[in-house]
Image (cartoon, rainbow, N blue to C red; front, side, top):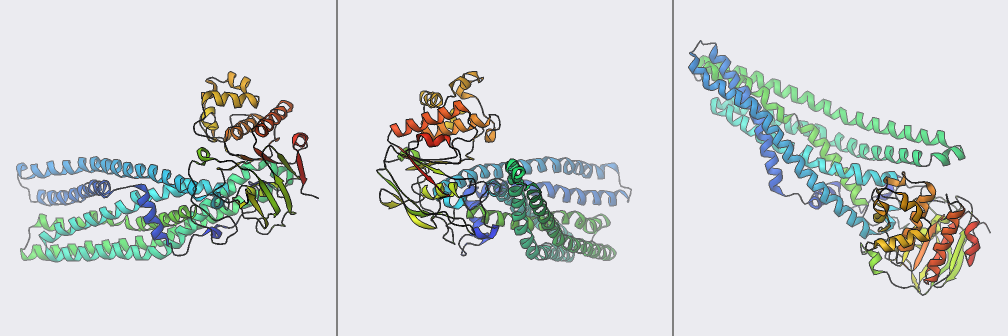
Length: 570
């Protein structure tokens, strides 16, 4: 059974240690971004100047209109007109500067976070990733990473701007009519804290459900697309489409749930703004009647709250984004956290560049090895002993568990029964990619050059070594037809090459890997007669170098040069 079609645990099955909350996960993720306080403060200051210009524009415009009604000379209004123009222009300028500062900060942090996430993922071992579907992994290192960056742009900075602009507005009104300043402060406080409180609980539930639902859409869609051929062959196309529709329905329901607390918060914001405006008008009229302030300044008090609430209006969206980012950060944390159920090999500290430190292996022993994913029938026990230079072929139809056995031999999956011993020690994550190299059937071809795709196996592969490996797999003629030879860019996933060329590239990558034990899943898939000859040459080259080779296949062609064979149906 291939890794692409194996049964998968649900989203909740990969929860990290209970002691780590989503808030703690977000704090860790933000620390990993390397974002410092000053860039965030700079963005908040720019945002404050942008919204502050809007508040200032409303205040000065209100004063000028009221003053103009008193029929003063043009000179009395000249300065106010200039200030109005200044605020009108500066609002757009500072808004641009705020976007520039905030997005620069967030994007630089995302680059750092992505790099550290890959480092944590490499060091955690393969056990964690193997509990997740490919679409879910893509969602976590794509959408979830972006959501953590959005915590800075759409949560922290807008909240900081709301606080500073509110303080400025209260101070401006309070200098004219102190009581009106108190009323405006109370209304802004109610609007900010109240909308946050109304949004918080439902937003947390909706955001967590939304993050999982959107990841499920990605997983179901990718599974339906990549396994379209298998679905047509097995008659499961309708079921795969139903899974996509169900995931999309859950995502839409999550979006609808997110909108409900926003509606209540918007109502509270409107109510608070209305009270502030009415209170400001009443206090301004009363102060003007008593002669405490002039008419133009009273107008400022009455109309300034209309602009002051623009900043506070961003609080509900910021709270929602904060919860969404917390849920995303927790899902990122799951990629490197130890598994709780013990179904897979425990994560261990692994050298991020294991290929450079590969060692020799004198013996690989399978002792009554039987494997199974949860809910599956275990494979029949295997007992084999392999020494350098030997090849074992594990044969069986699709779905019988051949690929699952390879995962156990690689040390990424804990056996259902029995053990895998490498020189007498149980195989574990520290052996994966170090002493044991696994080429999966759906191993990824990256969107980079042919040479760099081969350097996935070993980072110091030279051009001569790459050409030698490509010659062994029969791709030298193909390389010579490419525009830039081995420096030609390949499309992501290998979609710009044929199935046979893709398989031979993966064989060349396995040939270049220094691990003494090589596991290859379905090596004869998509290969023509020339490709079969290339596969034979690869296996012969590996055994000649005293490497242990284990193949799993449902084809008969590789069996002719495998010294040992075992059929899982027996």
